[in-house]
Length: 397
Image 1 (cartoon, rainbow, N blue to C red):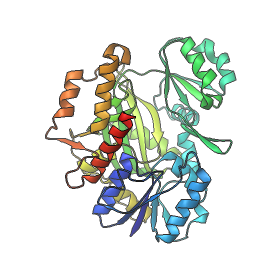
Image 2 (spheres, rainbow, N blue to C red; image 1 turned 90 degrees about the vertical axis):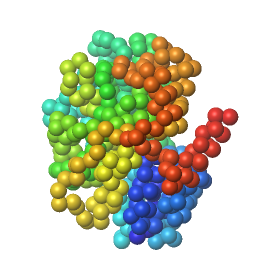
Image 3 (cartoon, rainbow, N blue to C red; image 1 turned 135 degrees about the vertical axis):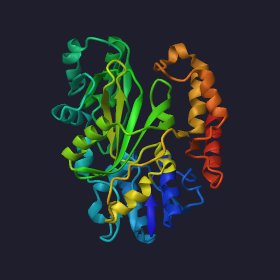
């Protein structure tokens, strides 16, 4: 079976490439540049450079359509939000026998729009942070009197937004006071569109990962974030598998069931250290960066997802996996350490409970017995050497 995996520069794409390659699939990889970590894997049959889906969405879709036809692709797996949106809008252009392994645009919009998501969560009695809805940069000033405490978290309704034939990309932003908050709404283009201002929840982040079928979980996995990049909050660079939290499982089922979700999703919570209650942060309708941890612990989401879109469903929920295993992203951890050394912990806004710097360095230099790497694999060294080369090239520049 020929499988095309997009966005080969992502760690999640590498995990899918390795998983499906080991399962016997012929895996093809596309990316916006040559020599990505996924294309350098021994499990990649052939790699292609295509236009960037963010800066050139129309050209990107045209290139992917051509690849699907010339390489006789059976299953296309878009790995990022921008790829999913681009390709979803052209489902009818693909060959009838090819499977596009992602949920529909309508479902994506239901969970990707954070404004609608948090309104849905409130109606379903799923705990959320205190939230103020802002329709536009102009209406922000009407909401300003309702903000009572700082710091706050600012979230665009969409992290990726189509506007004027381009994709505006942004992430979570923070403000420690009114001047910082006003500056965000004056300068950030994406905040001209609907957004949220939320209280900052103290506590550790926990991800619940699922393969969902309309109203039930087919596979489940959970991990907690131990370290992030940047240290104040961002992508996970060290994570640990944890037991499933029954409340999180129930909340995820309520939310995904309400929209009839079909496919993989990451439902992210933060357990509030003030009351112990897990509160919803966001839902991502795609594979996640630390996907390799789930695979290493025994829940092979890429293989399960492939079977699901081909019409094969597990008879029982796959939810048995190893607890206490860690996944580290070596270069991400190195960046974490460098940021803390350069700027000092006192001004980096390190979340309470974060490992001390000397402990992080120990985790970086010495690999524990139950610790896995998401890029480094002694049986597949190409991706690690590629990442190392690109990292030091960027560092030199």
